[in-house]
Image (cartoon, rainbow, N blue to C red; front, side, top):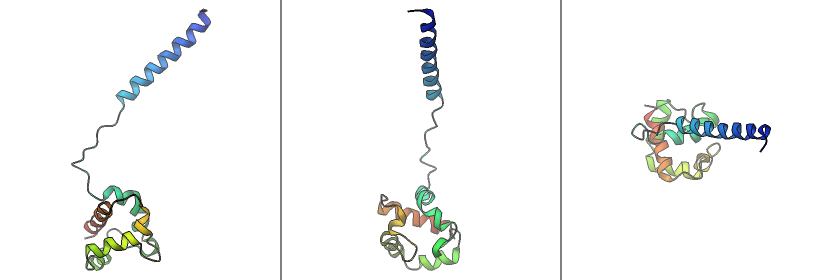
Length: 116
């Protein structure tokens, strides 16, 4: 091999080694599942967009009166409303089609708890 061809190969190999070492040293810390609040992740991913601003009449997170009225209907009634959708603004499963019923129930609990 000629010297002018060796240098680029060496530099490419060094870059690969450097990138590999940086990636292994910069991996995020493992999530502390003891700090995870059930329903919070689902709320942040799917519910937040309407329930934070009250879009289409969605009860806002923190609105104690609205959530007290909804809570009086019972958790099962709320869950069924979320699963089926509530016209005119609440889409079926709150747009979280892949969410389990438990994840939706946890999100409801999260919103109620943070609205008292």
